[in-house]
Image (cartoon, rainbow, N blue to C red; front, side, top):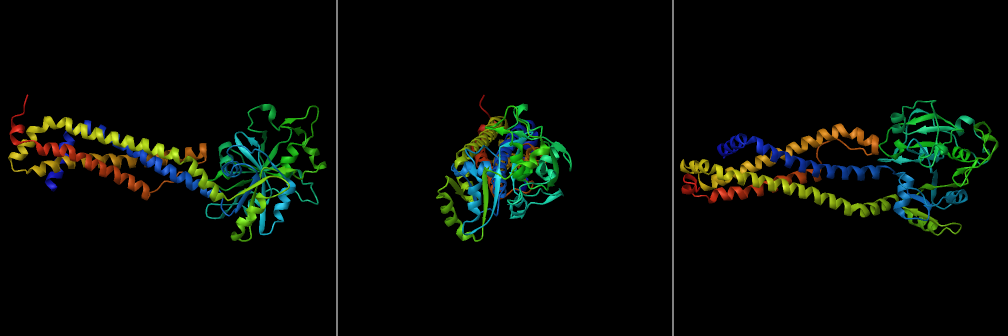
Length: 432
């Protein structure tokens, strides 16, 4: 057997240029399969780690997936806001331990602005219930109900996510100007009310890294002289004068809710969904994520099918190359038969050759994926916020590689069987 394997390697080496192209095509198909599997796994892990420890997300009546996307992942926009009175009523519901309001809608150079309370930095959890950590500086203070006025530095103070600070080169004390909406129009800039960087959060690998955090009072101060998404003509309130106004929030976009006991989640959800003063929706983050994966599962299966088809085409190419060269190797195989090689030895020789090529392609595909992941993961995280993890193949990826190798071995049996069927006379005296 060892002699046959060595002969298979030597024979493949003599036709290395053509077989290298076949191995490369198998490597690319393996790369696609591994890449799709890893991206799928990491995307799900990134989404699942983006919020933990939050029992309910409450917002205006809309779809559960939409509420999850705009409140946690900053994707899309809210159909409506909810009144501040409703948030206060939420805090008084039986079983509710804490609430963290979120107000969205503004941005800074493409990054979303999140107005929230100081409790966001102590209550919000990510990953395995890990708290947010300030790498530098401090958080802003809240607006107290009995004293809505705050120091100017806290009203116009911002806490940056790690990616915002790194990508834009911000440090503590630097100034920044927020924009109304997505910032597509320069006229929507809040240039009259610049902010200062109070703190920078440690990296989490979640949408927090790509967010600019300000206080709810700051969001109110920015829009004192705005109405219906546009500045009021002839009115301009200077940043130094906002302390003379009540900066208590009038409405927010969504609320993160933590419960005293997890078992109360469904009873609190029913109370929120049946709230009489305005239509509200309470969703469980995990359930909403499951709905999201159900919605995109068809696309995942389509991409997976395309990758499988690419792998099949590569294996068909392997069979075609070996079969095409078989006619030129008839005399070689016949000589092997003449010196004592059994028919099954010839079959194993051709099959082993195909297995070697498939194995080389699979290993090359794994190497290419590892190099691509190591080089591209930081760029992917910076552009799309997706954290791709470099490591050994997981069970799913290993299964795909074994499947490609097994299919390559099965496909190699066809040229092997063809060689097995050739007669000694046909090999020594090939027909012209």
